[in-house]
Image 1 (cartoon, one colour):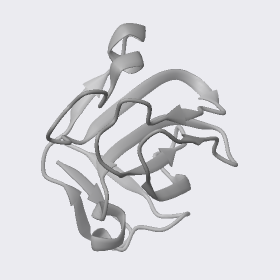
Image 2: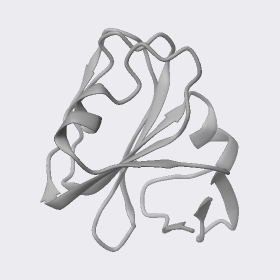
Image 3: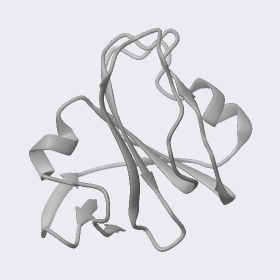
Length: 113
């Protein structure tokens, strides 16, 4: 479960972790159903994301090592690229609408269980 601890809301009920390069590369490509994914990196850095071969719009949430939201992109359309404004250690790929529904914004703290 992914929670916004600042606003006390649930962002997503379930999430799959992606740690290795292969699973990060394919992410949500060619998936009919979008399941929330958490990408874990070894250090904070600028992490560009593409939606090539992703069938539906997605929300992106970038978190630093303290699990603070440092960047958000809502409704990224298929076949697009996004480069965040801030360095992150974690990236959440979510179905479009999850960020708005949870009222999450930059500066909020997030918790994974």
